[in-house]
Amino acid sequence: MATASTAAAPAGLPTPSGRVLPAPSVAGQPLTALAPMQDVTDLPFMRVIGEYGAPDYFFTEFLRVHAHSRLDPGILDSVTRHGTGRPVFAQLIGEDIPHMVRTVRLFDPHPVAGIDLNMGCPAPKVYKKNVGGGLLRDPAKVDDLLAALREACDGLFTVKMRIGFEDTRHFDAVLESVNRHRVDLLSVHGRTVKEMYRSEVHYDWIRRAREAAVCPVLANGNVATAADAARVLAETGCAGVMIGRGAIRNPWIFRQIREYHAGRTPFAPTLADAHAYVRRLWDATHTPDRPEAAQTNRMKKFLAFIGQGVDPEGAFLHEIRRTRDKAAFFDCLDRHLLAEGTAERPFSCAPYPGLVARPNRESAAGCRL
Ligand SMILES: Cc1cc2nc3c(=O)[nH]c(=O)nc-3n(C[C@H](O)[C@H](O)[C@H](O)COP(=O)(O)O)c2cc1C
Image (cartoon, rainbow, N blue to C red; front, side, top):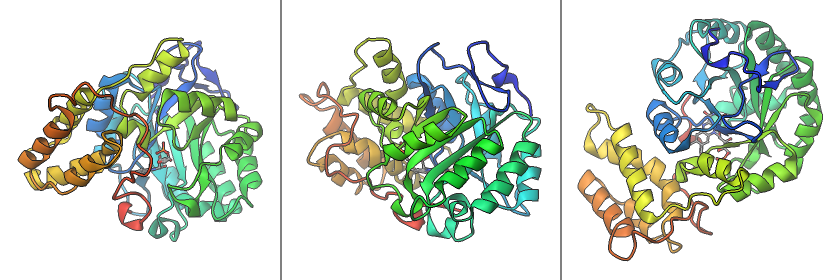
């Protein structure tokens, strides 16, 4: 595996395998990572996040591994062309050991920081194939897979997991495998697979993972603000936080966390700032071959989260969901975020209570395999 972006920096974090995790961009601060998100964490989105304040680590959306899978050109682009200067881990989802190992080798010539294994995806059509979160039902299989991937990865090997499938009965066994096979970094989403995306997050179980794991652990789940990150770090003792939906809503989050830990007041965006962000996302994600209506729909995936911070009543979310073309989309955006008297109002980095992102990840429909 090419290691251009992972050359062992002196201030990096040592791992149980004797390797070194890349250092945080500000020495001494907790690690931050952008969570892997299918159809979100692609090249354009990573570039935009890089402009607003890159996290310490990026993770790609998952690459589905099976007998006929190849490297996905889009995922490779996000590894090689993001231009943020920060390391990118490539995430795999699968359970077929020979093909998982084959896929690790395919990444060898490319500058990935490491290989990440998905043990969390909760969509039924995913877990029914015993991949993603489905692996958590079978600790013996997890052990075999981790052994094979550890052996196959010359560089860093990382795991992202939930705390269990329907309960935490296999939690200790999975953590033992993580330790036995000298995983370099563990990200823990503090929900079971069956809890999907909207239950409370069990930070106490993330803390248990941090206590049990010999490698650094990233805490994941519902971090929306720098204050949330500080609270979760205090509660779990983790080395850092991994943030998904919070970063779609609030691309300033990684910068805000750094400001907070440096003792400065975190940047507080206005609705005009949020407007500029949406415009930037439109431009970054638009491709000439995509019809305007399709691009408008694509933007709604982001707006489902961004809209939760615009107004407490949800009027903007309600209206933007019904737009069908670019003119209507920007007309709605201008009226709600840029009109006189609104532009300087604060944009809420945390979702206003009761505003639900739709479509969300509660249904299988959101996940392609
Ligand atoms: C749209 C979307 C796509 C996701 N895709 C992936 C994925 O490809 N791999 C993965 O491990 N987790 C995936 N997740 C889960 C996130 O990485 C993260 O664990 C989860 O959203 C909880 O963190 P958050 O509250 O910060 O969003 C996805 C989540 C969302 C919302």
